[in-house]
Image (cartoon, rainbow, N blue to C red; front, side, top):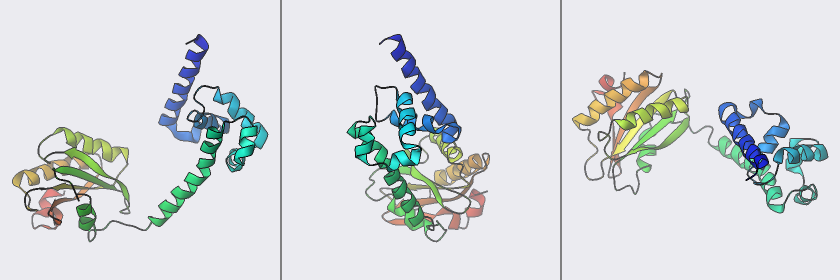
Length: 231
């Protein structure tokens, strides 16, 4: 690889890091388009190409709205043209999906049923973290540990990091008992209290810990001793 190629590769990496740290707010239009084209034009100076496209079409939106034929005449390959045409289409799907789910607020009444479904078909014990904003809208819901909720201290750090990453206000923990009843053990209770304290240190309220077994569940927050666990 020649020195010019080395510089070019370094430029792309710097641009990606700039995006990771700041988002697109600090990018000019041609820089945003340049970076977008990285994923459609792997071996070409996309900065020059971005300037050319903006000069021809006048704006980012005009580029995205242009017919594939015109994009190809402007110097793009068919694959690159199709890639750019995906942008408004994906934007529409994103907005439609977000709007459809906007009013799906998670509440104390439906949270158990929601989390029970997350364990369908899971034969081994898993720990799921659900994060919500201050209005009860889901920010994240996924597996954070495979194995017993008490088997490892390491995943508590992961819980905290994930909650901070999503800027969550509230968290709910859930784990399953694949071969047992949905009843908490003493270790389950001790771990719940420990996680509640840890999350509180970063401003996140652990509001419940759901234990699932055979399609049924127990909410620790609804138990008589719940107030002692969720500070």
